[in-house]
Image (cartoon, rainbow, N blue to C red):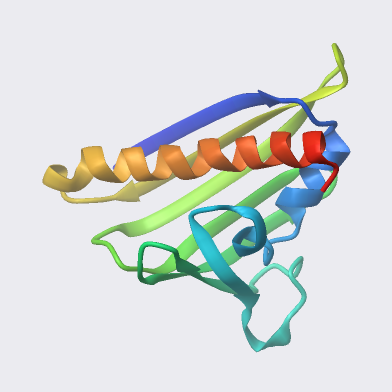
Length: 146
């Protein structure tokens, strides 16, 4: 089992960062790796069990299912249903915590999945890049007021 963990302190309040994370269907609207994000069957984006689909800008698409969403714990857990890669049993979770100094937010994001050994380094780099870029998107939105 491959495990990826990325964390960051963001220059955003907990509420600002949570607004991004909580909208499970919006990832393709602001993350530069993805586009055309939608929730299938018109379900609410905060409904556990909903499925988001989005295109990868470099080609292919992903389908992910929301497994947990907690406003109290500022937590989101999901699994990949489809990816154009040889990954299996991918589950990820992101959680946010307030940082009182400077009114910032700490985010941690992890994923566990199975991938062939010869593809592991590339898969880890891809997941780490996706997670880090999300944290950067939150920082950029705060700076630009979006």
